[in-house]
Image (tube, rainbow, N blue to C red; front, side):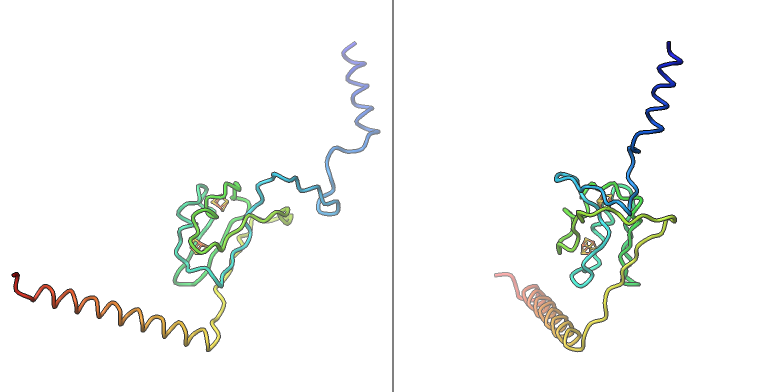
Length: 150
Ligand code: SF4
Ligand code: SF4
């Protein structure tokens, strides 16, 4: 009896449509409440603080401040969203698309784009202003310390 049942199931499997989809030829439906995944970052807004990498439970994110790069192992991402919540500049979003199929375990690395001359000038001015504010605060603190206590 069991053999007939097994044979019936096998025959049914042979002549019915496969349960799997030929991704990426057939793009599966992206369900409304699917979490999405991380695959990219807005490098123009990223300040390379590394908070996302520190919060990532699988360690699939690496931020290299010296090389000005942000990288991800897309196969290591468990779509938890911790990095999105941790980012102070909102430069990470859960992408509501399917991951590109790949045959190798490559990392995706993004480099901070070169600043335009205007952006460089604005950055230098902001840094100079910050340095002046720090120097003024230090001078005020030193002056206060030097004043005799009344
Ligand atoms: S979603 Fe979670 S696992 Fe994926 S990169 Fe962000 S912190 Fe790491
Ligand atoms: S937390 Fe945001 S700003 Fe900081 S390194 Fe990550 S992506 Fe960049």
